Image (cartoon, rainbow, N blue to C red):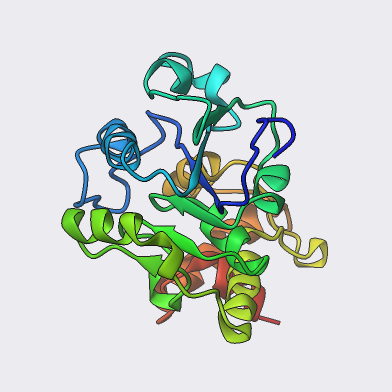
Length: 232
């Protein structure tokens, strides 16, 4: 509040922008054309909602992805609509928020863990876990955005599920399993897509990864990361 010079007690809603080119349709987005469509629609709706402090937060890698900049797209009034640049951390933004909005980002999980109501604007990879408040279509998103103060806080089960999902989806593998660890999900996709097309020296991390990947394909598990963490 001090940094943005907010002088009222109205709730703070952080709208977490996505990287414009970061696979917007990887989960079959249906409520919006793309992230740009979502952010401009959101901006147009909140202009008329004065009893909430709306804070747009740019993606942490905005500069790396390049133009356009969030601040050049949205309209702020510095009264109840603000914009934070990428230098402000996600954690700091979450701590100072009352509600958060994301299309399907991991920040929805992080907010849930911290007990913050999260409005998820489209289908996300954690929807089946019933984490967050989902918009079923474009009109429903507009409705929920206008009434965001009515969103329920996550209960203990939802917070625990969010922690479990983060572990299964993103935590590195146990080093004792002798597998590869990736620090970018795109690298994971590229490597796993081609791993079975090569022959690796036995007892190497690459050999173990390809062997386990083959076992997973033959299993009933839908998620490779979870499968790896659950095996002995």
